[in-house]
Image 1 (cartoon, helix red, strand yellow):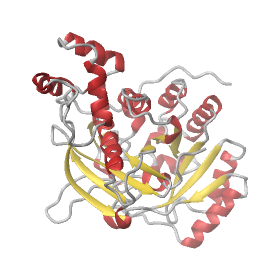
Image 2 (spheres, helix red, strand yellow):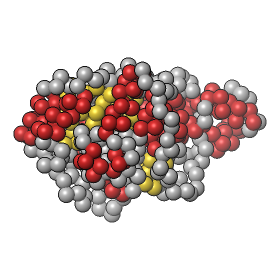
Image 3 (spheres, rainbow, N blue to C red):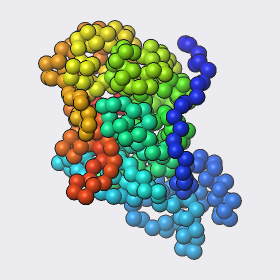
Image 4 (cartoon, one colour):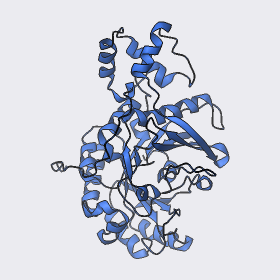
Length: 389
């Protein structure tokens, strides 16, 4: 097993501005306990607050705490983080996209998708994205700021409570999967994303008690951060947005490739698979006459052959200002066959939420006078597979 190379600094720094209010979800379990005591409350209030936040109903009162202390505790540890702006639904109500406004007016979105055997939330980790992939509406809009751990967790907690309340067709249920494939590059907001994930994994009452296998972290290929994630000891699913098997094309489709080329990205991914035992998902948005040739399919298959991996082919959805379109059904079929000929597992995913602009690569959270738009990235298609085994 190869050792991790020395860490390199990530080069994208979000604009500085006012910080979101500190929420108990921004803190470790130990930090919450210490902060509660430091604020003059009994230590057991920490558990009561966590149980209320993660597991109470949406509008349920904080009844475990004496009325005289509720306002102070809410202000100190449960400040409001996200305000719902609007919802849009698709797929007979089983796909629900929510646009949220943060304390500073920042807009983000999440998408809750219910399937017969599971429910998945696609979350944003940044407002906007600094990776500048030209076929993605989020990347075209640039980066506004990182989200706090609390803002990330709040998207998931709201979805979990909606499932328990039976807000989506099918009655009450359980949120089983989280995919970090909404707005932003999760590994460019590493510390906050990992803090959020640890809260999702923490058992009751201090978290949501989710399985690491049900959480997918997507990246365009920030190699030092992939190595860092490998060493966390968490059996998460890693998804690499590759989109091209060669550096010449990937430099254009995924500009970060000029810093960490294909071979370095895949080497980091294979180390992740070796250490965690988890199959790496390779995301490949198929673009007409750009990356869909049989030659590139053969290159991709040769790169991945014999590895613990699975390819998710995602037909490109058009975005405003983009010159690219989805591949033809014939080109898609030939591409899939050519990759599969190398013994590589590969599937094509149907896109959920297309009629509400909630499909692959279309995320660009905004509000207009006539038709509010807030779009989701590659997660809708990956989510259709459930957790990678």
